[in-house]
Image (cartoon, rainbow, N blue to C red):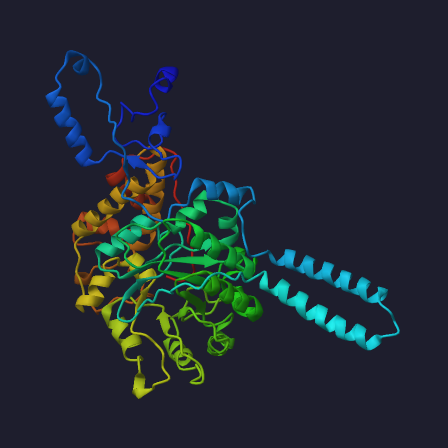
Length: 529
């Protein structure tokens, strides 16, 4: 049977399944040049059905129907080419920017050559030697310094207006493409992919490059990159710029990730502590990219010693064109997600820029969980007291609030508390599962991936307390619902459960039963709620 299947003509689609993606005829279900999933489209199926009606021959009736047409699954954008992946993995990609250790080696070699040359010169002319040395050092230092910031032709830079928009912040693991499609349904204006590590991207890791994929419904889309060295940021910018078909509206620099593994590499929040590296990173990105660069940071390393109000004006004084906005998370690195976000300090950072240089907009982030929070924490501080130095934008940047209440963009835009029913929430989960199977595939591996991401999302969704059950409106981000809380019906009670076994039951309602030994532990555990 195995040999029989593989002996079929590889130019046709699978005769035994309509939407399978990685079955035994996987080569017929995947575009090997792009890695995109393939499926039959409804129009193609109708056209083939009409052809079969016109040609009712005995031979055709005796043979199974073969679908000849192939349709890309939803035309996912930002799919890196196979040739680029191979070059990255083999370290043969033609980068203009050199690695920092390569530049250091060149400097050392040039210094050795300079010393040897000076020794050989006539000691009777010390002034000439000194002049020659200064000229040589200046020329070679300039050539080495230029290697980290490649000189590319000038491009017209895109502009993005973040004002009065609902922006879904990058969310690791749970901010995947199917989830972002759900957020677009509920009215999100701007979306951003999950944090991608530069070193993994430069190694050609397919799982990391999958984080930059974009759905056609995402009309304003950004990519977030975390790196610890300027050359890594610059090299990633080269790949994003050179890759054909990539559509990215802005690139977000991650200076806020508190995870130890990321900070130990010098990336994430630890990059805030190294201004020299940060400046090289910003210069490298802005010189290569033709889209804005945003910088997402925290208030500082320790809440007792916040320094974002010093870092932001320092970056402003560098005079680098192409910075679209600062995005300030109102917590320090050591706080992670515990305690409330400090919006007073965010307003202080927004007013810290100098009037001697072009000012850069500031977007605040933290604990927006209702339209009341948006109005009281952001709108009241925008231009507070007629302060012209306040660069805080009226932008609703949503993180955990979007995970717990995906319909939050609708609430903010319509200025109301939505008492969404359990049935409506189940329909939302059905859409998520359908989008997941379209994106990850409908084979067993695709089902497993969809179930995993669904369970990760349910670990946040259960925190929502229906509006009709609250004594005081609105619900706050740090408020925990009572233990063993019962809903207004069985489905609502199931969705309120903190038990992982109940989350698995919900997944079985949508994706079928799980194996007997199946277990799930949420990836993101925090001491905050």
